[in-house]
Amino acid sequence: MNLTLKVWRQQNTKADGKFETYQVKNISHEMSFLEMIDVLNEQLIVEGAEPVAFDHDCREGICGMCSMYIDGKPHGPWQANTTCQLHMRAFKDGDTITIEPWRANAFPVVKDLMVDRSAFDRIIQAGGYISVNTGNAVDGNSLPINKDKADAAFAAAMCIGCGACVAACKNSSAMLFLSAKVSHLALLPQGEPERKSRVMNMVAQMDKEGFGACTNTGACEATCPKEISLTNIARLNQEYLAASITSN
Amino acid sequence: MTWKQVFSTSVGNKLIMALTGIFLILFLVIHAALNACIWAMDGGEMFNKGAHFMGSNVVPRILEIGLFAGFILHIVQSYKLTIKNKKARSVGYEVDYGNRGSKWYSRSMALLGTIVLLFLVIHLTDFWYPNRSNQGFLLGEEINLYLKMQDTFSQLWVVIVYVAGCISLGYHLAHGFQSAFKTLGVHNKRYHIMLSSLGLGFSIVIAVLFALMPISFYMGWV
Ligand code: HEM
Ligand code: SF4
Ligand code: FES
Picture (tube, rainbow over the protein chains, first blue to last red):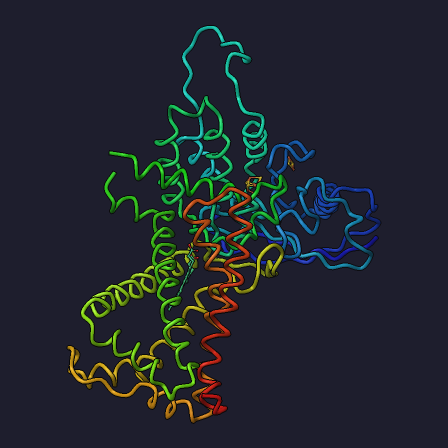
């Protein structure tokens, strides 16, 4: 199929960007969206133009690097899906596709479609870990964990930190991401010792990074490639409330 | 950790919204129940008795101050939050995200709230202000509020403004009621389903009940 692409081009963080329109021809239905962009880039290189910069790594839906806002949807039109796993059969011949970077002040554009998501790393550094002593690892079976909790913790741990939730949210809120990280550890006994300081420090860091506040609209949950549930946000709120009521 | 710190993060700001929001919901229950006395079909006798109690007894008059404080806190916090949230994205999208996963009214809380606020100002100037100024803002002589309602709601445009205000309030609550409990941390599926249905039912009942009041006077049902 032949497609028209409207792609955001921006030289660097400080430069003004604008949309450029490109034509790509003979795109197979079986290509992934990123392979289609590869075709565009090869074409640009042959023409002597600068290829479109975009983030990607695993190309199998597990790393969270690929970040494209495709026709108004982070990761494109499919549900529970990353850009790298979006296939061109989602489009038809003659379509015009608009591709934008994630938009949030906390995610400044590095170049073209690449944004700097290190704000997420700093949120994790503020408390998204457990401290363990060195020495022999304890036997996993010596720590009984309720099956429901293990499942819920695992579902929260699925978050790949892609930032689509922020991109979709009208408030550019990072609450779905944060709540996944907080829930994952709050549900497990290993997370217990740092449970209170974790939520307080991570919320403080999230605010420092300039993300907006959550208004429970649900746009994040609907766009999340890993189907992280909005329930986690309510759990985060509970963790926050419990930690603040019981702190000194 | 001080209380000031607790309430000044983005999650803490939301807690203020939720706590004041639930407080205002409780006010609505009392307000709707008392006003329903207009349908006692006794020429406003029971309604005026209720209104007299609310206006002449010290306890509800002290609670009234709390109500104003609750409104002010809810409104000031909501605008601060809305501005902060808007500022978090200075360059917008070419193609709008649309409504995948979210209801239009959940994305329009500030707009709906502003309509409710404008309605509130009109409503207070229609009834609260004339009554309280007649009382010298203390515990003086009240006006006949039933007759005042009859008079006010004899004009069609006033009825339309009131019905529009009630519809906005209904949508505000359709999102706000369940959202407030999420903000307070209710995440058990069982309670969440219960509170969501209760919230939707409450929003519809409150909006219809309040809207029926001006309509009843205009149509001459009471
Ligand atoms: C009787 C009147 C009102 C009631 C019962 C009410 C109730 C509520 C409730 C329960 C919430 C949900 C809180 C949460 O999500 O945690 C809420 C949110 C909100 N209210 Fe109100 N409200 C009223 C009036 C107003 C007014 C007059 C305004 C604005 C001028 C306003 C603006 C907002 C905004 C912007 C939100 C969204 C905040 C957020 O979700 O973060 N409300 N309201
Ligand atoms: S919660 Fe979902 S959308 Fe948000 S960062 Fe994690 S995987 Fe991506
Ligand atoms: S490239 Fe790794 S998730 Fe898409």
